[in-house]
Length: 192
Image (cartoon, rainbow, N blue to C red; front, side):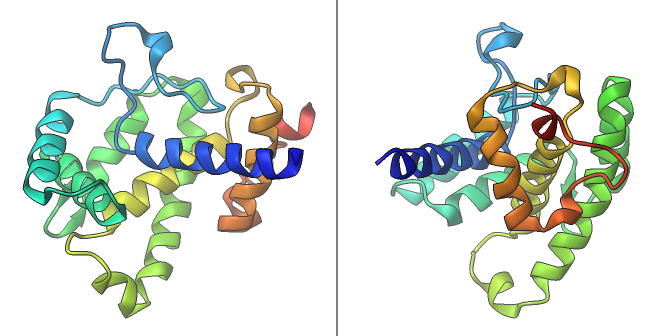
């Protein structure tokens, strides 16, 4: 029974990561309220475009939120903040974002940018993936991968030490392969 409960909890964490990939800002002005999953990172994404995209897309869809709508919200939001265009990801915006992170987070984010670009490129080789949504899947896939790769490479002083977080790292390795980890560093979850 415990294993089934743990599986449910891990699926819930995955869902939170999926939704939190859109943005990670504090609605109430309290930075501790951010949806920081396993790695304490204060993101600086603007919230107004997210609210507008969410309301527009969900209102137009007139249905419950599903994976297709999540991809559409991502496309709208990352387009609105200039990180995605009709040509694709705007690499200079991601580099500028990386450069504004605290120094301890810049290396994991830089690694994640390269790793996730390769992951998304590989996934998009399947024509079914490109046709599976009415919206471009790249903003969602790339930013979800970034979020998960930063979690997997979280600096030890930012790591939220819990059994759930410890269990999440092998799940991320299962999804992306061991390549998700920075090659020369030991991960916080492996330390304790």
